[in-house]
Length: 215
Image 1 (cartoon, rainbow, N blue to C red):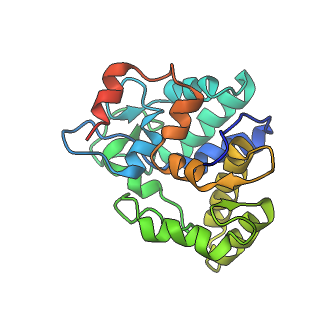
Image 2 (cartoon, rainbow, N blue to C red):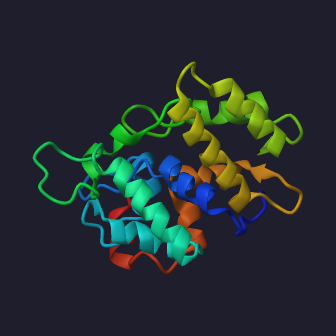
């Protein structure tokens, strides 16, 4: 079994990049089972209305243990960057609101391919992370192995994707590594459906919203 994720101190720039990279999915306020990508960031849509507001992103950061400054800057950065991309053409709300139905537009390149273009989890691509890069322990990654994976996944000229992937994995490693410096497969898997966030901040989401995520 993998080591339990733990909180670690992170810098303000790293923290705001974390959600820029990870915050690429949300729960659907519809009857269908939400994709893994939507479940991943459903955590941030606290009221389950299908729209993540600036204040919800701020509150989610605080619930995850980040301070006032990091949470404020991160919320402004994330909602400012994704709000204009992830919204329907006829939306009339604030440009910082992030909409469920268009969240796939925020997916960055140079990633592992563990989400497809619709936000569905791809088990084969996820397994490749470990078959290709986990050389020390079969079901876990070291810091150096994460570096090697990031280099291997880089698409030429995709500087935004490089930054997103780097931030995503570095902060995940900081949050989820065990006492031996290993990031285990079960911890990584829990990021893809958002369950890691719910373990770190179990009181953030309401029971009613959690029911919406059940399939």
